[in-house]
Length: 389
Image (tube, helix red, strand yellow):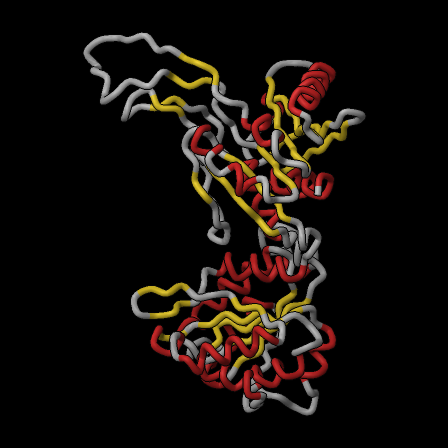
């Protein structure tokens, strides 16, 4: 970890060793810049800030220097900062970007430090632009044309949140995830489907049976796959941990509901199924069962999702198997039995005794060998993805 970032609780090392330039233009959303800088540094980034004079009126230079730990460029001098700093950097992020600045960049106008940095960076390092303006400006056909023009030159845009008549700057977590994704392309071109969370089965029209799985592993896998550049197709049941705002997913309730997506799911290259899916479903009763007296619950087996997917799917299919209070040898034996039964490429197996909040130990098992993987859940998820993808 760099000396610069020791003051932060690190979230990942995806930006470790990376030099990032953050260009700030004169939108009121510039007040969010300190949070954005801190989040970039929590992933290891070394952040240098460039501002327009309009931005300085909204957020002071001292706040930006304190947040980044580096001098702020507010004007171009004989040091030719827009050339020398670009040569040393890995990416240029412009957040917030006003309609005025976007149009200047699209037309090659360099009358601010930020637009000059853009012109120098284009074609040399990746560029991410994060618009923020009133909705009427964002929807203006000329602004749209200028955005499309910049996209045609490889510039990545992080779409704003359109609410309250404004195109508001996107959440800093979404911006940082986009930056990480641009700089880390390990899984670029891979179509990865992750099915996670718990399913539920209806007892009557109100009550369900489910399980205590948190869905944390599936969310870690999805987050890490996004960071690594995969083309993601996500299906989540019930989860009990917060999902990152940059993940889009389809919700499923029952096993039958999940299998209704099968034709779309099997279009992927790799399917990973850490979901805690119901093995049994009740014989559903109509209406709401009276709570005045007991009743008998009849259960019947649900369809096995992995087996149903393998019927038509020719790509890599990875299952998960959780046991409790058994030896490592027995865990691996049971995993291999399931691999053979469902024709899987691998199974991630673990003993639930070895799972604690945020940390775990698993075995990635194939028909011929196995590999032990341990660490926090994000780290384990990343190692699993590197092995199977």
